[in-house]
Image (cartoon, rainbow, N blue to C red; front, side, top):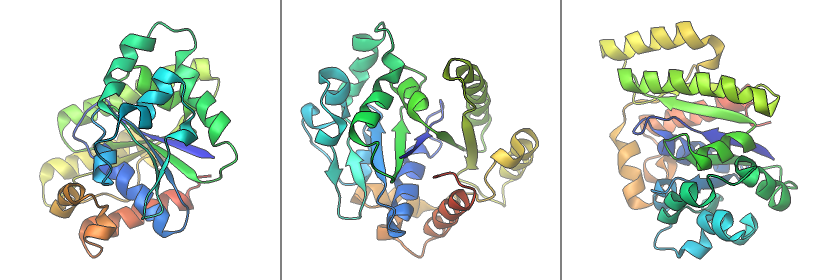
Length: 254
């Protein structure tokens, strides 16, 4: 069981798109990934065509009602196993925020339900550092951080990098991380400047693969499809395939 949290405190950076399409690429390689939706917007669930679920059939029930994770897992036709999200996740901070040891809830649940499984697990996190995201970070072996070239997104990345350094103390381990630049357009000076800045600060922790600003990546979720099902020959599909192979070659899913 290898757990990857896909997280950035800034919204709109391609976090859900990256979770969806890295998982889909792993599924094409017969890795049978698990996707955990911890965003109250439940966007990765919607993008996978799963909607209108009762709260009791989602990750909200795990946190609120102690329902085992394997009880809310859904096996999808594209070989992805999904633990869907729900808007009720927005209540978890208020319900559990003061509970001692709450940040370890997800890890304990994974150890109880999926410790036997050697498949990669990707967690789509809410774009805020609250109870749900802390659970994801505590459970994660590694963190994948999508970021766009704009100033606010890079500031969010830098704050997250500092927060991960602080969390390493209580966790008593190094949190491995990789940064991936999304919505990248080589022709835009801003993108080229952002790439140079990220390379300078993050070095080998910056992925070599960059995800293009491809309209097909925005269109596919509306059809309940990953990019490979929607437009397998698109630039987005090509580069998410490359990103997945890069992460695999560097042992990110081991």
